[in-house]
Structure formats: C-alpha cells, structure tokens
Amino acid sequence: RFEGVTMAPPDPILGVSEAFRADTNDAKLNLGVGAYRTEELQPYVLNVVKKAENLMLERGENKEYLPIEGLAAFNKVTAELLFGADNPVIREGRVATVQGLSGTGSLRLAAALIERYFPGSKVLISSPTWGNHKNIFNDAKVPWSEYRYYDPKTVGLDFDGMISDIKAAPAGSFVLLHGCAHNPTGIDPTPEQWEKIADVIQEKNHIPFFDVAYQGFASGSLDADASSVRLFAACGLELLVAQSYSKNLGLYAERIGAINVVCSSSDAAARVKSQLKRLARPMYSNPPVHGARIVANVVGDPALFNEWREEMELMAGRIKNVRQKLFDSLSAKDKSGKDWSFILKQIGMFSFTGLNKAQSENMTNKWHVYMTKDGRISLAGLSLAKCEYLADAIIDSYHN
Ligand code: PMP
Image (cartoon, rainbow, N blue to C red; front, side):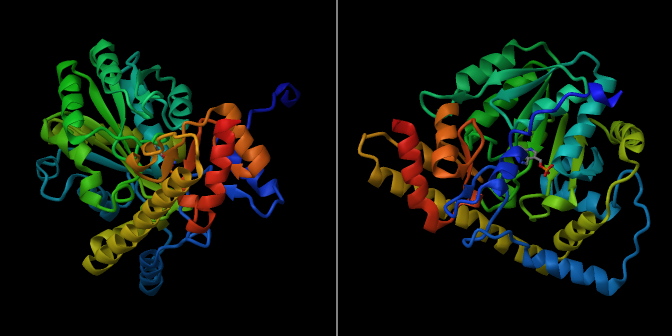
C-alpha cells in the first residue's frame, strides 16, 4: 500500500524557493525561480491586468465551463500575437490553437499528441534546457535525446555541434527550440543561424517544436521575440508552438497559455484540433477562464494593448539594467582579469554564470544566494541595490 511509496526529490527549481523561505538571513536573495520582481524585490501585478479584471467585474462575466479548446476570443488573439494577424498561416486557417494550462500544460498536451500520432518519434532537446522539458516528455512516454547547444569554453552557442546533432537525428524527429531567451543559458541563435537551423530541419523532414515562454519579455518587443517562429512558418514548415503568459503578462498562477499546431491545410488543422480536444478531455476536461479573459481583453483592446507593451518594455528594461550593473560590478571587483562580457551577450530573464555545482552551492551556503545548481541566476529577482553583493558572492565562489 502507501507504505511502499518512496520520497520524491525536491524539484530543482521550485525546491530552491522552498529552501529560500526557510532561510532567516537578511541578506538572502532568491535568484532561483524565473519570476519578475520590482526594484524593491516585490511581486508585480501589471496595471493592464488590473484594468482587464475590472472590466470583467463590470461586465458581470459568469463562471460557466469553457469549451474543451478554451475561450474562442483568447485562441484567436493568442495565435495572432504569435504569428502576426496577417500571416498566411492565420489567413488560410492552418493553425490549430487550443488553450492550455500555461506553457507547461501546452507542452504536455503537444507531447501527448506526439505520443499518440508519432509513436516512437524522438524529440530533440537542447543541452542544457529548462529542466521540466525532460519530465514532460518522460511522463508522456515520448523518447528524447539532446543536441549540443551550450559551449562552456565561450559561454556561448555551440552552433556547429547543434547543427550536426540535428542532422544526425533520425529523419522526422521533433526539434524543441526556445523561441527566444533560451532557458537556462540566455543564449539565442542569431537571425542567420536561425535560417540555417530552419534549412537543416527542412532538409531532414524534422518537425520544429517551439517553446515560447518569453514573447515580448526578452527584447521588450513582441514582434522581435516571435521572429524565429515566424521565419519557420514562412519557410512553409509544419510546426508546433507552445505559448505562455506567465512572464509577459505576469499571470504565473492563472495558468494561461496555448498550443498552436501549424498544418499544411485548414482541413488538417481542424483534424489536429479535434484530436487535441480529445486528449485534453480526460486529462483536465477544459481550461480555466480567468486568465484567458484577461489576455483576450488586453490583446483585443488597442489602448490596453499599448499599455501592456509599455509595461513589458519597463520590465525588460529593468532586467537589462541589472544585467549591466552586475557586469560592471563584476568587472570592477574581479582582479583576476576574467572576461565577464558573456553576461551582456545573454538575453532574457536569466544569466548563465558558468558557476559549477560546488560553486553554486557556495553561493547558497555561504552567501545566502539561492539559485539552481546549474549556475543559472534569475536577473528578474535581482535589484540594482543588490548587484554589488551578488558580484562579491560570484567572485568568491569562482575563485575558491
Ligand atoms: N518553457 C520555458 C523555457 C520556461 O522557462 C517556462 C517557465 N519557467 C515554461 C516553459 C512554462 O512556464 P509556465 O508553465 O508557467 O507557463
């Protein structure tokens, strides 16, 4: 019976927050989970979200079940936000969009589709990647293997390794790509590199599978951050795209996102959508409505949409400022001559410091800086005021 159940290990990312809460030291910093904080290190609810919620109250919206595929107004705007409203894939009705339980739930639904319709097909994931990707494919019983991505020597992209591993995979594999702001490295391919990746994927008959968790949050521009996905769609490729509104609208706990499947015909899209619904029904029946209404209201209203873009630029800008200050502090304090410029080359919410497991443990045990053991820090949880302290901690951990 239950006596035989063993203790599961803590989650490598969410477990960090648990340890942080238990630490009573005043200097403690939580750079583990990727959640935006203000300069005062407080959680932030976007003004546009509050306005959208007020609208919902005024309208007296009900709490009836949504259809299995989610809120129609949400599904429409989310696909348009991703591809651009005038994209041929939208105009031709070739995208099957189903509302999901944020990015994670949308990835999980896509994994279930792969398991059912492409049995035995492999998903290629980057090494390293967001830790939950492996859990998702394991639980969905989808085989996966890794392609080279991060080069520790340059703290940059191992582009040749990436291309040759994608080429070497069995034809018709799925290739999981981070649309922008790669997690955990913060290292993205250049536009020219994206083109080459699309070429190789097309040559090999692979199916690109994008995880877009940071649209608008990486560069501050919704369009720029979707350019990788749009490039692949313009090549005529079929593709999968999981979206999340956790970061860009700060809707972490609302669990709002979507899975989009770009097909080669509108007929195929209708069939794929019907199968996604069939997979969702026994898993969770239908998705929650609150976050979907917020997104539909914000994206669907020109005034709120513009305000959202301003708030997103503000958040992305704050992260860029702490990135710069951290680099400045490290460069000024570190007397070893180490080149820290890789920090400025990374984008998005994270920085991959290059600290190894033992050094990351020193950060936590000695300096009360909570972070994942792969050396990733969330800059969204850092303030300008704490940059010097963090730089001291990093330098101490590197050199000891
Ligand atoms: N993919 C990546 C790469 C992420 O970083 C995250 C959030 N950390 C997600 C997906 C999903 O997050 P959520 O389920 O909150 O949308």
